[in-house]
Length: 160
Image (cartoon, rainbow, N blue to C red; front, side, top):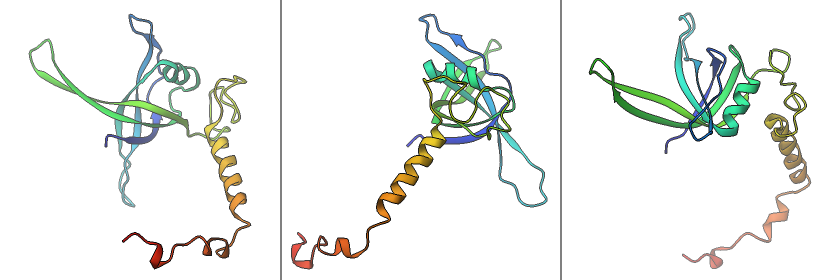
């Protein structure tokens, strides 16, 4: 399974570009901190990210250099021959999902915590998840183990 989850800081402002067919795309890199032991110097890996279409437009509109971003996606590798004749290898993550990771107070963009600067096309994923968790927790809080006792199969009901 090719699945990657990263949280890092943008190393530069993302730039929106378009393919010849008009599809929006952006390429940028994020600095992802490595886990270190106490007393060791912090280190980071710089990961290249590619996003397409509406996701690319959203990233370019709402994210800027230094902001924390959460990315889930897949790894894509490739190779090409450089002008000097050497073979070069590429490694990048294609973003399938993007999340805001900075708090609304530390963010320097137009993201205000509830919607993206008043826009109705995107909602805050975090707030949606929190409200779902609260609804789920309260909907099961009234039950007890006795509610399931009548539905549990006995040894005679099992097919093996």
